[in-house]
Length: 109
Image (cartoon, rainbow, N blue to C red; front, side):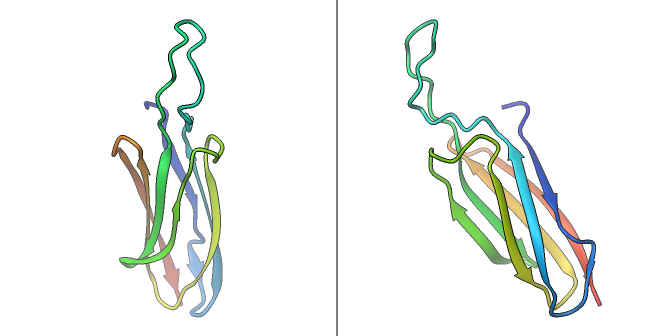
């Protein structure tokens, strides 16, 4: 899928103990496998993001299993309490095993 692009918003700075909001979106068609091709009548194969994991300094802080009912371009927003500077990593996994990932750092004072 050529146009799959993860986007993430993480504050660049925070104070120790702050609860920050993280927003993620990935451009993905999310084909459920239940539609049929209009020309051939054949089912269109399922191809969805089936798992999303967010980690901070290697520790999982948010994880979700995704089902076909989720709309195209899945968006997740969640909060995390940060105590130290570090790096968030975000990983989306597709049905065919394709992994899309990105990372963002935060400075905590």
